[in-house]
Image (cartoon, rainbow, N blue to C red; front, side, top):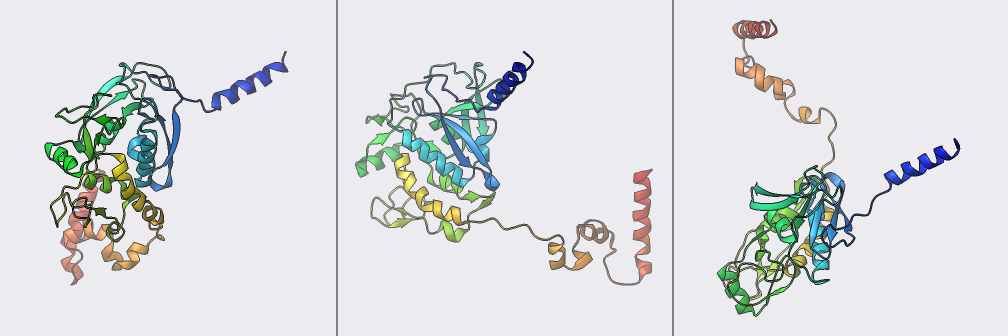
Amino acid sequence: MSAVRPAARATARADAFKPRVLSCTQCRAELWPVTLEGHYGQQHEVDLCPNCHLVWFDEFESVRLSGLGWIGLLRQMHAVMGVSPTQPLKLPLACVRCSAELKPVHMLTRFGQSAAHECPRKHGHYQTFSLLLAERGLVRPLSARDRRTLHSEQRPLTCLNCGAPVPPGNSESCGHCASPLVVFDLQRLMASVMVRHGLPLPADDASHVSWRCRGCGDAVDPTSMTACARCGHTVLAPSLSDALPLLNELEPRLRQFRAPGAQPMGATLRRQRGFRGTAFFRHIVQPFGLGDRGDWREWLPSVLLLAALLVFWYW
């Protein structure tokens, strides 16, 4: 009996550390684990439901993704578009780890308003594709000008959340999944992905990525231009199929970008003027006039005042 217990205990311990396959709490399908690059070379795993177009984040994984991480996530989102019909969410949703009922939360970010479904036990949160993009400020509402632009280009409008075609009209939400109709904000999208190791991509590398105007074919800078300078045609990316060619062109430059290495101790100080370049000189010596050249007797009042302040502080 005593020989069986350690073996059983070891098996239970191994099962406890075995990674558990997560399932979508709405459709019960297995979630796709996606490993993405985070800042400073860290790896983060998110889980994606290809049927419901939901992304599960543990804690703060969404804000830890680098530019390459976001490109990888957008590519996975594009891969599941049209795989299966996506239906409106059946609320309330449940946590994929503890099955607790998720709490709808509304967030105000620097990009605007967004929402999510958060676990009350802080295990993570669910977000639809469109809500995830809105939280990062990567999309903007579809406008009447955008509709006219798509009509002139003879391009159909599709829902950015589920990929379903949107019939002509003035509806503000998708009739298939009930998500708001949005299009990519290319300037914010490019600014979000052109970051690696916590540093922005050099401007020279970013300038090699261009958007071809659908009106005249001229090259347009998607990082700063909302319309073609030559013909005035609006720069419009209503789907992931339109945005991914830009990101694919940018990805090799991001992979080649390397963060500056750590500097030897004291290298910054040696580049400065010795003691006069230290923080102690700037914040303590210089404000009291001790850094001026001259007779030491001119420094005496400041030295006495500094000594009195130190005695008073430690008293």
